[in-house]
Amino acid sequence: MFFENPKFRALGVAALAAVAVVLPAARAEPPAATVVATTTVVADLVRQVGGDRVAVDCLMGAGIDPHSYRATPRDADRLARAKLVVASGLHLEGKLAELLSRLARRVPVTAVADTLPRDKLLPVADNLYDPHVWFDARLWSLCVPAVVDALTKLDPDGRAHYQARAAEFIARLEALDDRLRDRLATIPKQRRVLVTAHDAFRYFGRAYDVEVVGVQGTSTESEAGLADINRLVEMIVSRGIPAVFVETSVSERNVAALREGAQARGHAVAMGGQLYSDALGGPGSGAETLEEVLTANVETIHAGLTGKR
Ligand SMILES: [Zn+2]
Image (cartoon, rainbow, N blue to C red; front, side, top):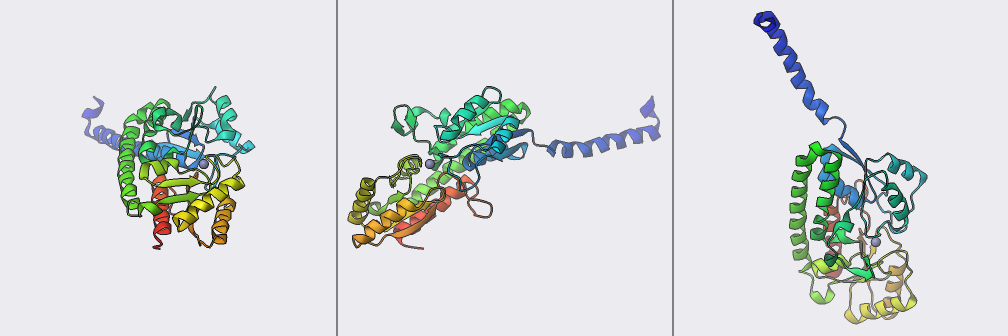
């Protein structure tokens, strides 16, 4: 027999060893799936679940407002090459709706927030719900299974990998949820009011017991009226609210009008700082994941409303 000759047997073992060395490297090479995510928040969700098995391409960068975002010719190209598209849903990407529904005829499209039970959502009109669900860490964790399902369909060999990472991410979000609530509870209730540019924080307010007042409504597409501004100024002055906040992806104009209005009534309102709303921070911001963004926002709110910086 071939392997009975000691010389050939040695050769055979060497050949097997060479194969064993090559295999793990080959397996780690190209990611199994190429996924296009619409927003930075969704891209983070896909990365948390997918890890190094998934290459994520994000359409909208840091600081981009998804309500008014329109696809560029280059985006259409990126979407056309995707094996899977993951969107936030609940009409957050208002201007991409038509493109995404056309795309769904040939590429799987998963809108994660659309999978949430309706009784957990905040209605804004008939059959329309507030899309800003990621500001409630526990609610966002309910979107994780939709990503596991979509990735597993695309890459069945990765099932155990996706399930393990998903379980870890959900556990982290639940622990974070508890930490955020405890931190905010140290702000006196009377002052625990978040006045900000658009109504992105209603889920946040419900989850963490913070009164939330947006100047602009739930979408940045609507304009704030003078009556709204006056009503808010009245509330800020009468309750002695110490600070109002601006958002990274929304214009500061309305918040500036509030501060001027309160100033005219003899009540100085500080600019409480920038909150991340519909987009995560860019590279080097220290707020590149949703977990970092939620932590940063809560620290900004805490500092603004307690006056401790
Ligand atoms: Zn928004």
